[in-house]
Image (cartoon, rainbow, N blue to C red):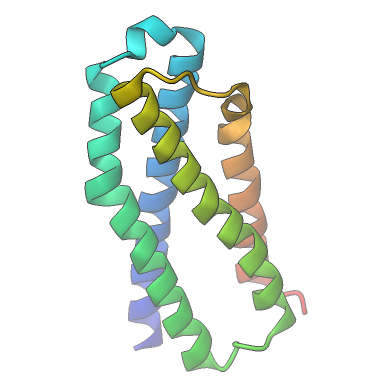
Length: 138
């Protein structure tokens, strides 16, 4: 059963990270050319994708992750506790990205310049998570 849950977890992670990177791209476009994003179909499409794919994938990531952790007896492992920090950061960034894009499209509020760093932050954070999950260093 563990391998099935792990496969589901990996699939959901790929869908989630892909959705986060798409959202980051939409925000980068909004920062570069704000007039083109205002009410744009691209941004709306990304928000719909987020609602139908990215956010449910995040829920599956959390549920399958906890299922694996408790099923394998890792709930108190230092590597897993450390891994939770970047996982929570990615979860929060997902929420911030969606809120920023939604506000831009619905209310015309400009996107903060810190979102320019979102793609790099997503990839670096994901690399840390993957390294901790695969190597289980301690």
